[in-house]
Length: 410
Image 1: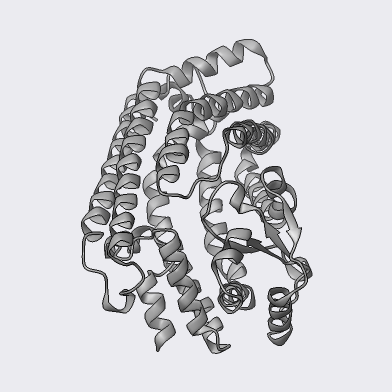
Image 2: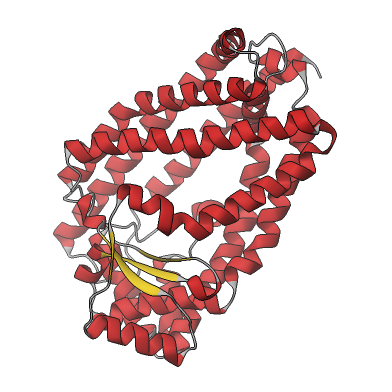
């Protein structure tokens, strides 16, 4: 492969990605000024709607600035050979390729975390604070930074180092072995996310006995949904935004509710949100999504196996010769257009599954409550009610609020 060609391809793809992101943002900004659909009238009064518009505009401005900075920094570091220089320095520290990958990846993770701190500070303590969402204290903010770095060291750097060992052990069959490793890793994180990762940042306590727990338990029994327990997470430690999710497989499925969700919704509305999530499980959406996800991983690991030993790819980033983490990073940049295209398919599949989960709740008499819950959450989160159709098609994993409310009203 030609070093110069690879170099300019990386530059071009980063620039084109930035242009694409900017165009999507401009379309979103234009659509946000459209009149609110009649079916959604009443979610905001005039003052609330002005506040929502201000919040949306503030986030978009901030997003454009932070994206421009991120792309510019990446291009400068890449074009000036900083990534390659760091790789050569690390090679001088140890002859172990596994350690080289671990050290290189960890240094980049730490540096990028430090670089992002001013942006995270502004987003948390200016934008989110000004609009009444922030509950994060400076102490929690700093603690999250250190916890995040440690988690990156264990998961990101650890996984990369393990893949390096696999590559050195059997380079000819790396693509197949790496595919297996990535699949097992993804399943492991999905299964143990709530048990191992969430407790690092948040407390989870069993939902107390009472009306809500009784309603959830009765509904789960009625629809033959087996679950291990229901937990409440202290999401209010950091934000007033609300959420709920399921984790685990088989009999070990765990329901997790943000405390903010319970505070903002009635019992019937909370139950409707959980019925939607149960619909995902009953319709086996995780299993149905797996072939597309596995295909994406398989293609990526196959291409990785072809290029990880390439000197040209590493040299395009300024390194002396092939370096596992550098080659993987450059391939990630080159992979961006394919990721966008595959993301469209994944989002189309996700939106279909969201429709089916909504329908599950509606068929069990909770359509009106789900519609009410979605409206309340949209109002509380100052959500945009008029997204641009092109943005929805390209990047939305859920149908729009209008589409979902229309569906509930059928």
